[in-house]
Each structure stands twice: as C-alpha cells, then as structure tokens.
Length: 542
Image (cartoon, rainbow, N blue to C red; front, side, top):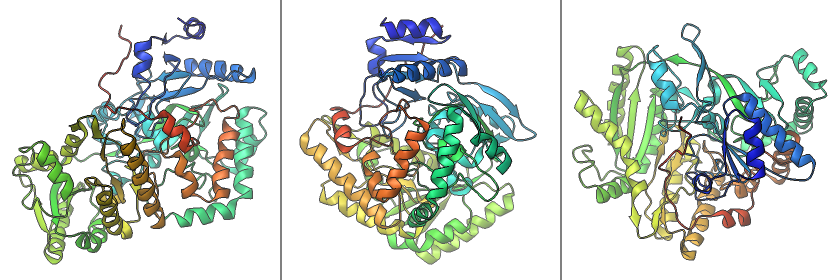
C-alpha cells in the first residue's frame, strides 16, 4: 500500500485499497470520461466520511491537494462519479434503511442504498418513492440526491428533491451539518457560528441578497420544468424560511457529501392502466401533449420511429407484435395510477377521444400479456446501448436535454436535422411529459473525426435547447461533460455566482474537483478512446 492508503486504513473502520485493478475499474463511470483515482475507500459510517474529509482538508491547508469523490453505482453519464485522489464508494456498507415509519410515511436512508432495494421494502408497506431512475436496480439514492433525479413517474410526482425533508451533509473540512427549512431566528443562529457551517450560511445569504434581481431574471429565462445546470440558488430563500437543502441537491458532491437523507413517501397503487399512443407526426404531438398531461398520467414516455427501427434492426423479434403502427413518427407510453379505478378508466376514455381527434392509434393493455408487451417496449431502448460497429458504440452525448413542453416537438424536428447533417441515426426517446430528450449517437471515440462530430453535435443540440428556453441538463447534472456549456446556460454574472458558491462551500477545491467547473480542454483530455458499460461492482466481500 501507498503511505496515504496505509494511513487511511489505520484510522478508518472501512476498507481501503490502492490496487491498480480496482482503481482502473473506478476510473470510469457511465460517461465518456476517465480519471484514475489514487485510493479507493469503502466507508462504514459517517465518522469515516468525516475523517476522510478532515484528512484531505488538512493536506490542502499545507498546499497538498488530494480531492475526494463520492460514488454510488457509477451510473452517472456526466462524469461526476469519477475523480483523482480519494474515491469513496458508498454501496459496500452505507446502504441501510435507518428508519421507516409507514404511518407517518417517511424513511431515513444512507446514500449507498439502491432505489430498487429501497422500493422493494417500501412496496411491502404499500408505499414508494416516486422519482426512481430507469437504472434503479443499481443507481443509488445518494446519486439520485446528488443529481436531484427524475424518472418515468416524475411527470406526475415531480423530482426527488420534492420528497426530501432533511439531509445530513459532511462539509469539506469534516464538519457535519443538517439541512432543513430554518426560521429567521434559526437562521440568525447559523449566521453567528464561527465554523465552516457559519461561513457557508453567511456567504450564501449575502450572495442571495446582493444578486436577487439577477437570479430572478435567470430563473425566468429558463422555462423548462427541470434544470440541473449549475447550483440551485433559486429555491434556498423563501418568504419565511431559509433552506440549504436545494443547494446540495443537484450539486453532485461538489459542495458537501450527503451521508443521510430523510424522505417523504407516497401510497403505491400496483393496479394501473397502461397504453401506447402512436402518432403519425410530431405536429400531432405538439397538439395533443398538453391535453394528455391534463389527464394526469403517472408515466408519459416517448420513443421515436428511428429508435424502433434501430431496435428492430438489432433484434428483429424483440418488438414483434408490440406496435400496431411501428412506422408512426412517435410512440407515447402512458400509465395511469390513480387510486380510484374509475378515474383510470375515465382517463383512458378521454385518451381514446384525443387519439381519434388527433389521428393517432391507441392500444390499451387489457390483460397481462398486453401489459408485458408495453413494458417490453419501455425496456427495449437498452438494446441500443449494446450495439457495436467495430469500435463504435452508443455513447451518452447531449443526452439529458430539457425543453418547455410547448417547444418539445419543434426541438425534436431540429434534433433530427442536426443528426441527419452529421450522418447519424436520430434515435430519440425520453420523458415526453417532462420535456426530457435523450439520444446516444453511435461513435468511435478513438477516431478524431468522430470526436469532432461529438462536440459539434453537442454544441448544436445544447444551443438549440437553450434558444427555446430549455436546459442542457434535466436530471443527470453537469458533471464534467456539460460543465463547459454552463457559460451558455447562464450569463457571465450568473456563471460567476456559481463559481462563488463553490468557493464559499469548498474553499480549497477538495470535493469532486472539476465537476461543474471543467473547461472544454480538460474534458477533451479526459475522454476515453473506447467506451464500455460497467459490468462488475468491485465491492469488498466478507
């Protein structure tokens, strides 16, 4: 072991390793980037996290930088789950449910628990946490909080942050704070603290006071439902409360490390209605989508015809018998989960009328076989991720764009043109009800031409979204991949505010260094020459 790894192992309860094989595995996440960490730590408890942060802080005070990265399942596509220095992997030990109160409908968890594991427990109590991501089998709640995640149910239930009551956060110097709404009196006490916590409250409070008008203007300019670009300075200060929770949500571990979260839950209804609505043109989508949203679906996903074509090309039998009109421009997958069965039936009748008026075709799952077919369509997009054309693979680029609903169809038209001009297949899917668009072009990262194409397409996609009042990041965060574009999202002054927030909370630049601040040159230097999906967890086993 290196001296650092040996020292950490002596002082921590969790395991420490600097094995090259393990470090090489943790040098990548689901993004196109790669950074080799120095040491891997599997903290057992919050005290381990505090000691690690304190150790790194003390080194930084002596001019020696050893950054810290917090990591869950590694499903991050923005390059935020990788980093040099110390990699803290929470899935090994800090993956417990601490408290579950079914009557009061809340749960307190550690960050390493997966959404899937948590949901299975909650279902037995007739409850669930709605904003689970598609990768819930291995995506962690800590990662979801770090990104303020959304999922297929967010069209009805909103983002994960809506369900957070309070957080325990380890700051850059090892202090532990609890974030929750504070009264004016409670805030004044925080402002008087002589700790880093006090510095943060004073710094953020002053920043918000001095830049109130600027922040209001920036908020109004971005009209989309979901925006994770930069730091959320917009929801901290409300009329009667001050709450740092929104600041840490979506900060991707760059301001503090979440070690515990108390979350509100909602009743779960397993009896739902599923349907597919196939539309022959994007113009029909533009007309019908607002009316569909008025019906309050719990899921409103989309898959375009190119996606269906590519899935069928790769796996000819996968969607056999699933779609009655596979050549339709766009297919919407819809679910209704209202607790009253009559309300679900009523929504389906209204949906049928909309389909008839708009020229669409509606297929309702009236038995288990039909339900499985629709679920098969929902899962089928994963087929694209395993395509290989030589060294070329589907890569996550410009894949988390968010649009105002009234501009979604316009954006899809322009995105198709951008891909066509780059001679790429415009396979598009996402959360139509939230205006979230995802695309994974097939590219060879070892080829200079494909790398240039990657950045050209990203520039055009992001700028198109921004001109329509959208965001470059709906829920996956900026990480390092999208950090160079933050100057396009916010004006120069607002961009400087984001950098000031980082300085206030992490003055030595210890926490997830480069996340939300990386330059285009730095991103290019970190790019992999070959993309692959993670296959092994590399967790310690007793």
